[in-house]
Length: 190
Picture 1 (cartoon, helix red, strand yellow):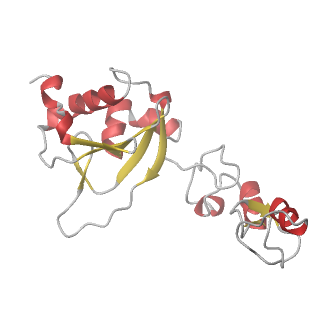
Picture 2 (cartoon, one colour; picture 1 turned 90 degrees about the vertical axis):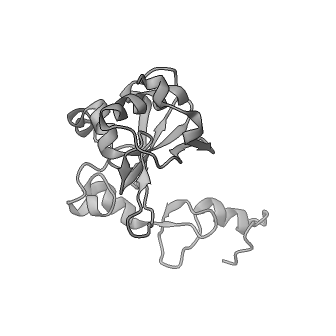
Picture 3 (tube, helix red, strand yellow; picture 1 turned 135 degrees about the vertical axis):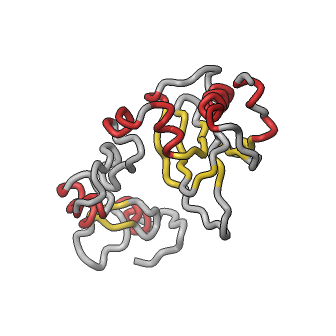
């Protein structure tokens, strides 16, 4: 059976640029990689995209009843699904970590920390190790962790800012908007 015979568009749901398998029927183990390549090719560029075109979004935390699992886009039953994004067209795929590692190589993915989240503070570096103190808090280094701890969320716009005094609840922009009589969208009193 060729990979084009395995892929049926009706087995998949593409909603808000998120592709997930809705058919519970599994294909033979030796055909799963071909099906994965077909699905990624169909929703991207017609062939298997480069690894650099993908970006890890988040791990999917789903609640299932007993003996129920989610399906990877290759039809494999999985407990912990992951969202990955194909960056050129912002298509998201619900995929199993092992399935993606088998396709692109576990060693290559570990070298670039593919399945690691970005730092909460700088949002540029990935958190290499979740066992360190900084890693447990979602930061890439001790420096980012200390900066992240010192900043707080603005009560008006939810942007993080340096708080100088414990009574400060608004960032500088929101404070000046309310102080100088500009329109206050949340009617916050200072």
